[in-house]
Length: 280
Image (cartoon, rainbow, N blue to C red; front, side, top):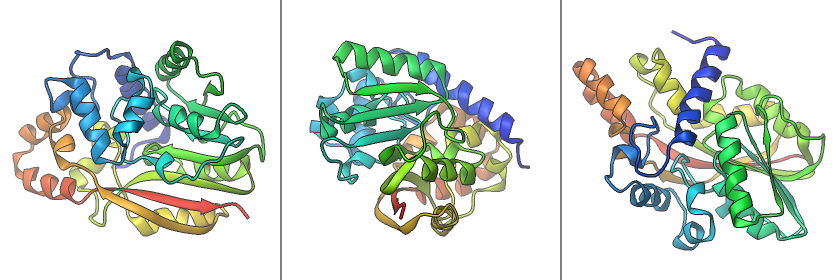
């Protein structure tokens, strides 16, 4: 059963608002991340981040409170950012990718983070202020209606957020609008060649947690938005244990024991893929 876009968006906003409000040591924020798999949350968050592409140097370079372990890749690792560029992060969360990008574009560059969750914006702004990042700005807004001027951005990055949009075509059209001619988009997506089990498609919590889709479907959506040179440049398996260890997933499997094997197989099929495209 498909959910109304407005219902999905509100569920996503509530879920990640709870994650943003969660402080170190608290449990049950609702993310498929370290809080459900480790007694030491910061260690669990860093462990997941390493597995999906962040280096030790990356993790040391950003404010500790910026890494919530919510991504499925590290788009800044392959974005080839240069000093002086303007970078936009779609769904910036607590700011980890913005802060990594800020170091690469330098004081003559600028990084804009957009997130629709007020709690995330507050947390990211606090991180920027505490660590004195003067070339980073966080704006409250939706990726389907970006608070960004036309043709003003050199590079767009995003980390597993487009998966959450109930209107991906609209979000990609907005990304195309704000990019300068010759600009690039580099995003991390959750992908799988296995169809989403029907029992999950009808579960709003699962939808809000980030479900993957087929690689070719994503590629086609980029092309339909007008992007050229659309391709997958890198891919890493997403640790299934972080999905299956989520408290909500554990509760769901307990209520649907006959679905446990199919869900485990599906979780094991998921990868974080880097998609890259350009605006002519």
